[in-house]
Length: 466
Ligand code: FAD
Ligand code: NAD
Image (cartoon, rainbow, N blue to C red; front, side, top):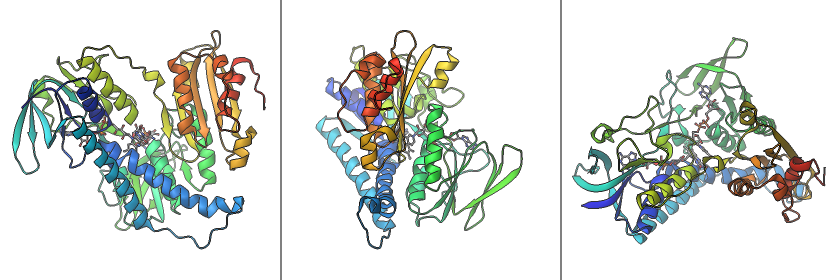
């Protein structure tokens, strides 16, 4: 079989690349080693985690907030099996949707492990051992990432677990230790904290979500603490031990004292590592870098002409929508187009409640670059809509160039900011000024009015409602 393009890996990078290639008239094949398409994101990442976040949020609202609105709920209970079953159904439906999309776009799919025999030949080894070969002009590597283990504590899948197992615990834990106060730790930590688990987050740095604007982690810690989560920052974990029915996590705190945390499980969420096992990269003349990522140039082409790589396996932000943009860009480059990719305008979102979102430069990055900037911030509690909804925690911050007023970054925490951040993305893509954003009509009463007010505060210190 011979193709214009073979894509290895069907996550959001790979399947989007395959669809775009097919749309552009390229004969395309997609190779996936798992029985379902969709990669980490659809099977064990974005989609199942959001299904559990939404389910646990319903419980949290019913148990803690509805009475404030005059809605009395009777005896509440959690049907954990049903909650997990619904999540699995959402995953199945989403993966089935992908299968339909592959057929509709006439993409030939091959289930099995893809590996290079040479730069233009891909071997596919099916689970039952059958081997076949695909000849191709171009290959797109989209093999993603896997959870990173601590060097002294391998995952055992029973008590010391990654996000994959934490999406399907047999029972809701009574207590759980989370190592890493990043996105996975806080999202899955939130799920279980809402369902009644005592969640203890142990983080090496002095802040949560440390790569986002620092103001966000600080505020998020305050609100999640109110929700019952425990935080232990600036802690160096030294030992993680499965003690049978429990797990013991030993760490050193800021003062150098030894401390111990116990839980039914320990979720290790300290990042993810590129996945290139069994790819046979050496047969294609490709050498991963020291951290295991596949090196690519500005066009996402590897050191071997005609072989491209996208998504988590090339590093940068490990986000589904970043992988998707790269997949589209590579397909278009193969077809001879000149697509544009603006990494600064890729938003990051944390789906806790309240949600957290940011795009563009953080204040810390601007300080480091010694760039003159101005900042405008607006608190949710001054919004009519926030009071009506009982969602007073949150703020929007707009950062703009001191001289030109061009928006450089937008950072927000609060109800619905996961959807609102697109306003910052559009502003960055179109190089809008804070004045531009401030002069646009924002519907009243909505949470988006906080964006307008923050832009007013940034451009000329003239918010209306503060
Ligand atoms: P992947 O999705 O990892 O897909 C790679 C695919 O390649 C896999 O299916 C794998 O089986 C296949 N493969 C690997 N090697 C081979 C081979 N040799 N032959 C054949 N197939 C192979 N991101 C967001 O943007 N938003 C979120 O809300 C979000 N939530 C997340 C929640 C969790 C719990 C996790 C773990 C991740 C989350 N992410 C989220 C991150 C997101 O899942 C990844 O950034 C995204 O999936 C990366 O896409 P990818 O296409 O690069 O790789
Ligand atoms: P992360 O990089 O978001 O967070 C890891 C955290 O662990 C950091 O705060 C880091 O300082 C800390 N850490 C590292 N080593 C440690 C140690 N030894 N002890 C204590 N803390 C330590 O990584 P993650 O939460 O594992 O998520 C992996 C990837 O998946 C991320 O790149 C993320 O972008 C992606 N993801 C995205 C979403 C989303 O977009 N909503 C959701 C889940 C996952």
